[in-house]
Length: 485
Image 1 (cartoon, rainbow, N blue to C red):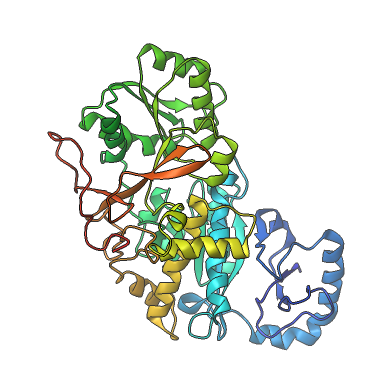
Image 2 (spheres, rainbow, N blue to C red):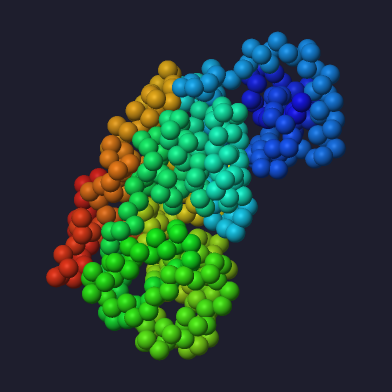
């Protein structure tokens, strides 16, 4: 029989001895699945009281567990986790688990989501939790960026770990989404996969609906502001990258920004972009829209600079990250990003105006002082905020179905002024009546919010789309409910 340690799984069964760190909660025992699965599992690392056990300690712990098993047998049986609609719900805590691509080709893109969720839960738990229950993010499972492992780990969280909800989720391929939707498990995370549309219990960080066929207006708006006349669009040869750029392409063409060059089949990760840049230079490209990752974007910018392509307007789909601009200052100069949330910079530029972002940065610094704000960490924070808002609406009699019903009645979720309003009555099946983004531009070693209105950092456009016959304009004033209103 395999045994593992987990902080707080079997209620009331404290581990004896002096293994816990001073000031940390007692660690508790639980019976685990066979050890052969451990290569695919990672117990989560929290702020306090959770850390990996070294191999020598595992042997000693297993022997101690074997000796204590007979004494604790009746207690372990009594502490068996509830299943079904109340799985993971205990008198003093609610157990949730994360599903993240912590290893694979792009781990840095996904892993910070757990940090953001933990920061929010730590803040809530420090105030006593919700209706007397603290939130225990007890498991973080790594799908290794594998679709088959992702589906398996989703089942593990539900069938073996018996979590109440799955959050946060940030994966390259969310194949486990269909299972979670079919089971009605409340699931929250980074909306970059089409599976988020699979059911009313799945909640993407800024809505669950993804439409790859509709024109995206934001790059065309930037092109009009700069009077660009020849655009290039680049993407990797993987579905998420290609699909993300389809809307960009359609938007540019719809608003009469000529696309002089496109390559949506760049091998990932990009290692040499000289051929693309040479063709772009011949086509006299003065604007580039990229749906690659940060490393590919930086390589693109450096290659353009090395070949004499100057003054090119750049719009990147990823890379709005303080640590990135510190590392790649020169390559990122002048690059535009458009985000579904208020920029991190509002905490200094407009203190107190967007309290949700103020709180996010304050709690991130408090609980993870060496972690800089990022889009993915913020997705973890806002996912946790939606989960908690739903819990508050349900009250003490918490079940999965009641939580889903409560959240789907929330018609204006902003995570306390961080997001443009999300209407969860419709956000599973449509993009909603608002099309708002916050634009930032890389300048020096910082990002600067641009465009927007005097009342808001958000730039909102007509829906379903601005008229083609007129220049694209930002709505002023912003629609009702858009932060900070």
